[in-house]
Length: 42
Image 1 (cartoon, helix red, strand yellow):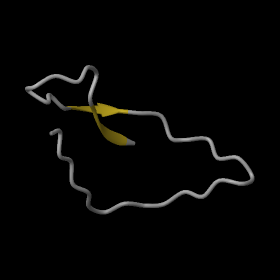
Image 2 (cartoon, one colour):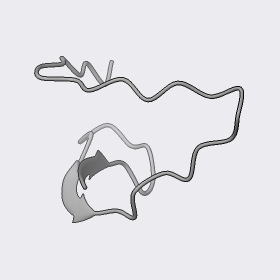
Image 3 (cartoon, helix red, strand yellow):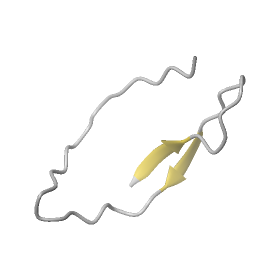
């Protein structure tokens, strides 16, 4: 899956798009599909 990643927080707030492995769910977990989200690195 694709994810925006912050490797180190700084004033520039640099995000990078990365390919991440699909999460492995446990019996008590829920997977939620997100279509839109906002990010504010204040």
